[in-house]
Image 1 (spheres, rainbow, N blue to C red):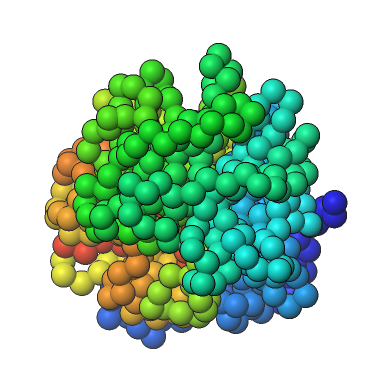
Image 2: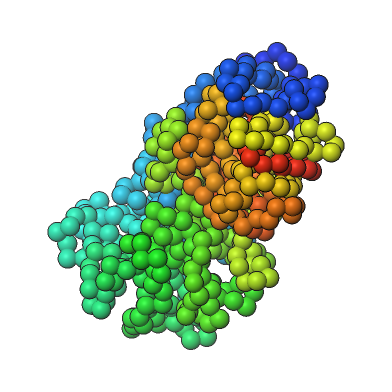
Length: 524
């Protein structure tokens, strides 16, 4: 095993003006002088001197150079292999004895056809990366010429890694089957020859049969497997049971069908019990993270609803003795310079804390000990009474803080109108290129868009009421971020090229009062 740590980037080039302690902006003499209208497209950039404990991005002129400089700690990213940057796909989390084992499909680098690799953590603040694959796709081709998503389960002293065996070509009878590897520890597995689960004849197709999620019942010594597959062109989640020694597999039918009839697969499904209620989660293929609930294990389930947006993909739960988390990956762009898309497969590992609300709905928040690690408080230069932004059809901007390499923003908002408001990230010192995290009350959503709202990227639901005060939290590291309306909504974002630049509050067709605003950073 080789343990790697990302190299810290050595910052260069100090600029000439000292700033306030919070946010890094040059203070203005009045709120009016800090406010910028949409028409001010040629405004000069703010000048910065970075605090000693923060990385200086002033010499990094391109989004790609910034991305290469990030020291990802919270949003794990595999170490560069030669000149290739690998990425995390479809995490398969497993917890034992204080350690979270984050198995994942490794995209690019030294990974052969999505082989399974491993990173571990005890606190979500740092990760240990295992250099060698935990389970490698067959280099001779065949039924497991590619490996797809699976899960790890412990039975007695044995560890089983169920996985998707994806055929190396269309000439094989089955496009996908379920196979298993076994080991005496969670860090070493060998494929079990001769064990294979084939698609049941009832579903009428042999190409899509994937993502086994395993659960062990010690009382009955049985393993339950859920598997995603399409039947009659409708995405389904199937259920199997087998004995603890992997014998006598039995197909027990469909436990959930896609009610939207729009997805080919309900990928990376997972079921769990939380505060007396049973839940199932899945990612609608190329869509968002969904969940449904039930009073009994494995359904019947109520109407599925969305939990997050499409940039937090393939998330599954993992729990310790006290808390439950969702572990997924943050989608990336094919090019960091793109202002048109965030659509590439694979990205950074992302972990969010999962909560069950009083009405039985689920919500996400930052991992508590991650949030607690942001201990350096930087007061924003907006005054103790907060800030009210009023705007007509033109955007009204207020410079508020700096996008450091990693930072946490907290505050409250209260609005009275119907237009959008939120955070505007500087990309190229032009308002028409701002990247917006917009709260849109009339549309009932929070959305990420580029080019000042002209290029929609992703969104999640948020039903808000005018005149009511809401708390919000925003966490960013590198180009990965998550915006939370506390207890209600989470929106994962990907923001390239914004580090070291001002972030502004904005409003349009609305009057919004922001209060209790503060930025926090994490000591080195």
